[in-house]
Image (cartoon, rainbow, N blue to C red):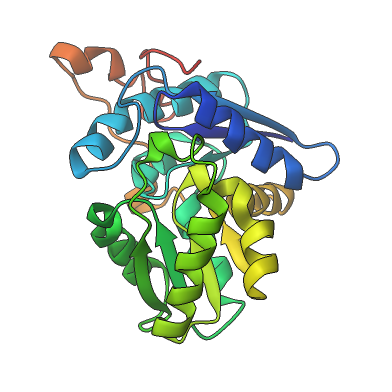
Length: 256
């Protein structure tokens, strides 16, 4: 089984962290390949960033289709381009916010999200409303550390754990969801300190894709998630023109 984990931003150091987290949970015989988007923003911290990350993500999915990839993880907590990726991929595609929130909902009556910047909180609330039952997400809390500064902060685990502890008390929640792929390595430290489940979406999504592939399941291609109808694309998007409805393959730049 071959799973591709796509980092939709262009920061290779973050891809390395994401890949390590995914490989740590992959089962025997599962190859996990982490790739960095070949185009787009260095980090995704706004709607603008998210929109401009999608072409690079889709190029990485389309490239994976030419290489026989079995399933994909979208490793950004905003789950950018998730629906479009499902139209392109033959195998399952899972976003890390989707996987983390579904997993957290199995572990307690409510969860709190600890994320990076406050400005991204609205997106987390939107996804919680899409993925989980009303009231499952009890709160979204930002540590106000930019994504590209996470790895360099020597006190990151302490800061995240402290905020997560406050979230548990204020929200009355039972589970913490880490709201950024760059926080993927913090689960054990935060969970040990607080004594509650702490969910990293990269790990959860990797195992979900692995399970879906093992079960022989993929996204339904009936109606909405059928391959997009071929049509002419112009300008900078010309390289994303699809070759056929049955075999959608982008001619855009591949991931690194």
